[in-house]
Amino acid sequence: MGPGPSNPYPEVIEALTRPVLGHLDPEFISLLDETNERLRTVWRTSNLLTFPISATGSAGMEAAFVNFVQTGDVVVVGVNGVFGNRMCDVAARAGATVIPVEAEWGQAIDPQRLLDAHPNPQIIAVVHAETSTGVRNDIAPLGANKGGALLVVDCVTSLGGIPVLIDDWNVDIAYSGTQKCLGIPPGLAPLTVSERAMERVVPTPQSWYLDLNMIKDYVTGDGTRAYHHTAPISMLYGLHAGLGVVLEEGLDQAWERHRLCGDELHRRLPEIGFGLWAQQGHRLPELTTVTLPEGLDDVEGRRTLLERYGIEVGGGLGPVAGKVWRIGCMGHTARMRNVKMLLGALEDLVTATR
Picture 1: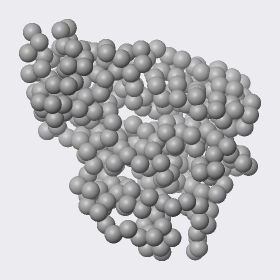
Picture 2 (picture 1 turned 135 degrees about the vertical axis):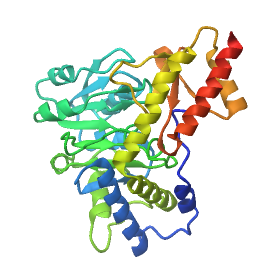
Picture 3 (picture 1 turned 180 degrees about the vertical axis):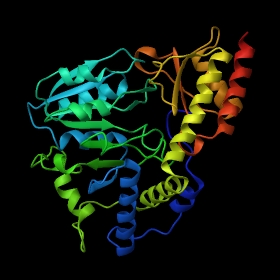
Picture 4 (picture 1 turned 30 degrees about the vertical axis):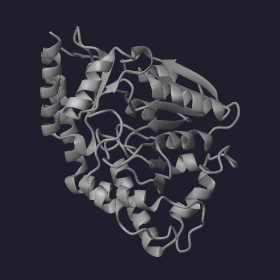
C-alpha cells in the first residue's frame, strides 16, 4: 500500500519468466509494436511516437526536457511537490530559463497562473498526480490555452489510475512509470510525443541515450530497425502483459476500481482519526495523504505496519516529513480487500496508542 512499486499483476510475473529473445528478433519487434499500440490506447492518443523508454520514470522526465530545450529557452513549471521541483532541476540542467509557479504543498496549482507566468514560453510543464502530496493538478485548461508552448505532463502516478486523455487535453509530451497504476515492476518509462512536438526536437540533445532523433527510427521504423540500444526484453514482456490485463479489464473499469478504493479510504480514514491532507476536490484515489492522529509516531507507526501486518506506507517528504503519510492504492493492489485490511490494521494501531 506504499507510494512506491505496487504488487505486479500475476500475468506480469509469468511474462517475466519467458525465455529471452534477441532485441532485434522479428518476434520481439512484433511484441514491441503491439506494446506501443497498447500504450496508445492507455494514453488515449494516436501519437506515432509512443513507446517505453528503457529506464525508470525519471528518465522519462529527462527525455521530455533534453529533447525540446535549448540554452535560454523559457520553461514554466508548476511546483507543488517534489516532482515539480525535479522538473525545474532537469529543465535547468538542459539550459532552460526556468520560471517556477509555486503552490503550497497539498494544494493544486491554478492553471491560469501557469498560463500567465510568461507570454511565450517554449514549454509549460506540470505534474498531473503529484506523488509527494497526493494532489491532482488540472491539465485540460493548459492544453486548451497554451498558445505556442509545448505542454509537458508528468503522469507517473496517474496513468492507468485516473483519466489521462492526451489527445483530448492537447498534451504534447507525457511520460509515466510502470510501477504505479499499471501494476508492473519499475524499470520502464512510457513516453508519448505529438507530431507537433517532434517538429521541435533539438538537433543534438545533451543526452545520447535519450536522443529521440535516433530512438524514433528504432521504435517506429518498418522492416529492419535502426539499432540504438539493447532493449530490456523481460521488462517489455512484463509491460506487454500488464497493459493486456488493464485493457482486458477495461480502462474505464480500472479507473473506477481505483476511484472506489480511494473513496473508501477518504471516507473511513477520518473516522479512525487520520486527517485528509490534500486539497478537497483534487485528492488522488490512488495516493491518499493523511495527517496522523495525536500520539501516533511517524517512524514507529510505519515500522509496526510493515513488521506486524506486512503493509508498507510511505512517509512525508520535504517540508512535511514526519507529519504526513502517503498511502498508495495502485494497480493490482487497488482492491477493496486490501483497503479493508489496511483500515483494520490502522484501527488496531491507533487503538494501541490511546
